[in-house]
Image (tube, rainbow, N blue to C red; front, side, top):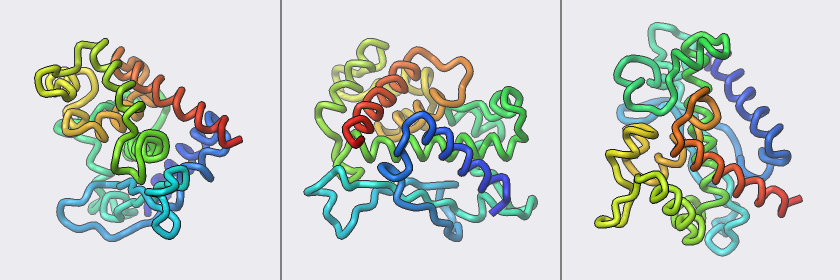
Length: 219
């Protein structure tokens, strides 16, 4: 991996650990790298569980963060910097990489890496506090998300799901693909954007409150 990718992972992990003491032990299982193949993303957060017990003991659920090497290579001719940089990506994702690079004094590769890792940490947080084994959403948690979407005119009552056009506008097009990506994209923007939308702020604050509540229970 490019050293900037490794530093980005460490920096984002350190940031979350400062905000939520004990975050690493409670939420993250491990980091791994794998060879890329067509169709894979730059990174992936997958729920993991000791001995398959998480369905009975959801508090044991942690997330493995996988970085796919082609996107994070030291070879500048090969690396895609997680695909979060470029005109198409800027429209697809919630975090504007150019702005993050400028505001935080980073190059675009590093800013892109920060955005991707923060997005995956959003998935890891949801895997921990909002789902069972990263699959089935906790009804109470999901009801809170629904209330936020309704308050921001981003809920389709007829279909009983987020209003895709509103989510695409207020979060990102990627966030409109499903509820998992909505939350992860919101977390990335909540953490990194200097001017997040009201919907992003509301979802980010909700996730922060739920994680803080969980961490207090752990301690």
